Length: 83
Image (tube, rainbow, N blue to C red; front, top):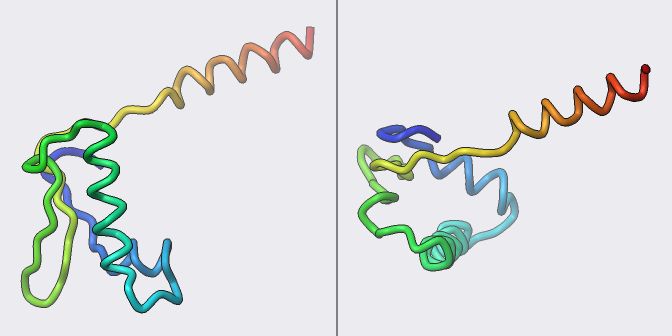
């Protein structure tokens, strides 16, 4: 998720808690725990409600993964197997 992007939370609720009546509560508690564990300032990830739709808004965090490094390592391993 890039900065200044939003995710519709109804989709998150359906994906992670499909049969829960308290999906928004579960998400809220999880978000607080993640923010505390990663020491993310509260203003950088916000929940916004407008026109009946709830969204998670990224206000300036860049998320990165090591997927590219993983893909390169995997390619090297496959090349070594063929050799």
